[in-house]
Image (cartoon, rainbow, N blue to C red):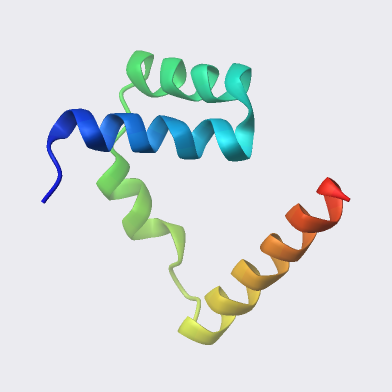
Length: 70
């Protein structure tokens, strides 16, 4: 199991990889300033979607992300 500091560093690396430094810092700032319940948000994120539909959306999102990099 990773310690909290390792998790924070890895998470920020992932955010900056996909969002860039400015938007990653903006995301962190938004989370800290708002009363945001991540668990509640996640519970409602995929309501009504099948596992297959979630998978299809993830694949399409990844394709679009890769296309934008080219």
